[in-house]
Length: 363
Figure 1 (spheres, rainbow, N blue to C red):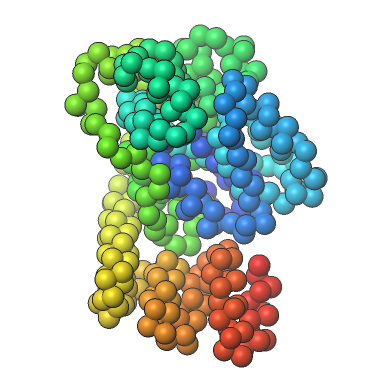
Figure 2: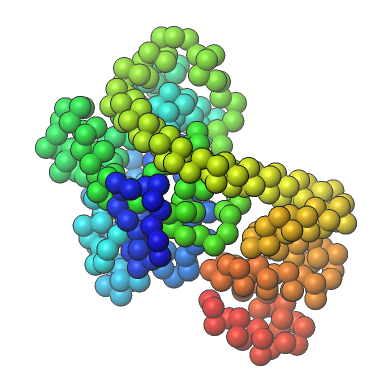
């Protein structure tokens, strides 16, 4: 596989490498994780969950990882979670990282108002309810000062480099030496297209937005004292964001026309797919299928389109057409085990036992 020339200076990714998604909270990572998991067989994916509110949570996460059987570790090709840089040291084979970043002010707003609209969460009880508003929340450090920079450093590096300027430089070195890609929440679609080029994905990664913070103000609507407090508590993140943004702009400019065209097609198909779901929900199945057929003409390699067509055929009780559409989706994305299992059941009901058994071998 040829590596993306736009990302020279980053670590080159090989198909045999384990891809580590370092998920920094409130950076559009919840949307991205659904896209990424479609690129790997579920048996090769490891998700490290963190539900523990402790300072040194990485010690707990790493212990859980170290306790895995050797065979399980050997088979991992994609791992994700809210862990900091450094977990690669425990992998038995080559790796690269990827991550998403976000404007520190936007991330802080999303962080606070996400907690605020979830009053039953532990974070609300521990942080929001103990604050006299957003500014106090920031000044008490509840937003996590310089979280993005800190997440890009190992625990040893954090101990060895207490100065923010040094930490930014070490974070930048870690990205250049160990990351095959980084993107930005504000440039999500552009980030996806660069990812597609970097990892040689075979189809456009259509998506629906996940875990969006609602009822939050714009940055321009906040009092100056609040934005000043955010910037004061996140000086390292601001510097990191500015330096990586400049590098990202150069990557986009290096192949501006191609990336612009791909982003345009991605957005067109995303909007069309979303509208087809709305049409289907309104029982306007013919219109929905017509729209999806148009999408198929634009991008015949998209499993998302065929899968949505299969769902509509099912609602019309046209099982044969549904199976045909689902099988086309599986051919384009053989890692969609949920669809594989479902179609196996349909084939069995149609009496096509041999075909169902062949399909189950993909699970």
